[in-house]
Amino acid sequence: MTHVSSMLETYPKDLAGVDREKLAACIAACFECAQVCTACADACLAEDMVAELRTCIRTDLDCADICAATGAVLTRQTGANPTLLRSILEACQAACEVCAEECERHAEMHEHCRICAEACRRCALACADLLASMA
Image (cartoon, rainbow, N blue to C red; front, side, top):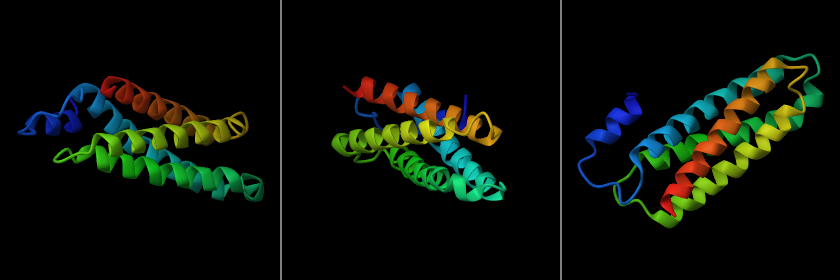
């Protein structure tokens, strides 16, 4: 059991129809993706061809911010608004898909981009899984 799961298990109220396992997986995926995207952007900045990676860097940083915000919003369950949760999950899923596509363009040349694309795909899937369980 992860710390995320442990904390959700201690929540004293019902999670209003949200699957705890999918919620924990999504929170963990969001924070992991935020870290990986930040690291990928930093690695891109260290590459000799940094000018060619400008879009990748920007996309990484945007995705990192959106994933971090999504993880934080999902962590707070008291008084959660289902419409807002769906909206931020949809935005996170979209950001992750865009970032994965951008990083995949560089994945053969830069290992950090391959790793980032994988993390983004995992996070997009976790967002989609949680969204589907909320419907």
